[in-house]
Image (cartoon, rainbow, N blue to C red; front, side, top):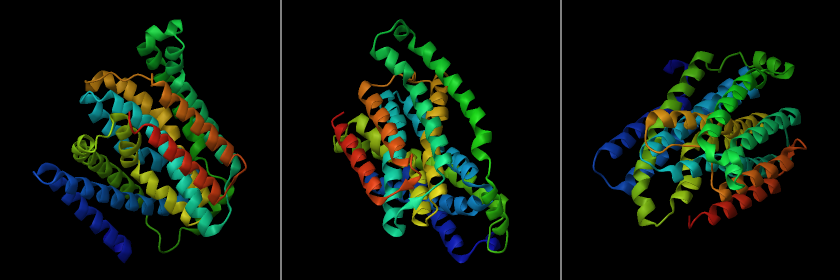
Length: 356
């Protein structure tokens, strides 16, 4: 297998393995919590780089849609594990903020950075507006369905007293919708099929190697993200950070490090279609899969019960963010100033949750 990889790829693989071992040692050996936090963060970044390399290998073969679905599914594994561990510990507020924070982080932070970096390097970037509108429409509908239990609770409708039952119904419906969306998401266009044929020559990884690398690095990122959050707990208390801010910003960024790195890398390489697919598929899968799965899994894992009833402030910011992104991508073009505006909105939202 190593003979198939370039020298740079082998160095990246060795660095990722070394950091993973070091992160494991700092997690289970009594050592400075700040050092454990830094090592875990560096390890997540290294694993995310390996995922990015694998996505780059798969992109021209599978097409933007299939690559985005696959990468987002593996990239959200750390978030799922972190939320399960937090629910078992009774940290419901952290989980609620982390779910919404993951959506906001991808829509505003990662997409904003991708537009900013890609725009500064390549000027105006253009992408498949039809695919972008489809993904965005699915995301808008998924987020709306996910937030309906919150709205019924906020306006005190008769359904408000049945938030668990309504959340269960919404969770099942969202999972079914996701299953129905997969065939359309992974279908390749004629141009992508031609590009895949041209990319089948020398210098490319075998498909089994790229998929295997994605799977292994995704699973390792799940474990390392747990170690990262474990090391973060002392910092939350010493820095007097609220649970809401920790979940909305810190846990969300750590759990979505894969998308953070990959999306920006793809935009920097002027692969706008792949970047947009990877970035937007992630929040869509959080609304269609992660949040519903947590509703159902909370009955099994123990600890706090998770429903789709979120605090009004979280509901308001996620709705505003989805609408803002819809307006930005509807024309099929991105400019660096649009990225800067999305980043500015993210900073304001994050600052508003600093105190809880």
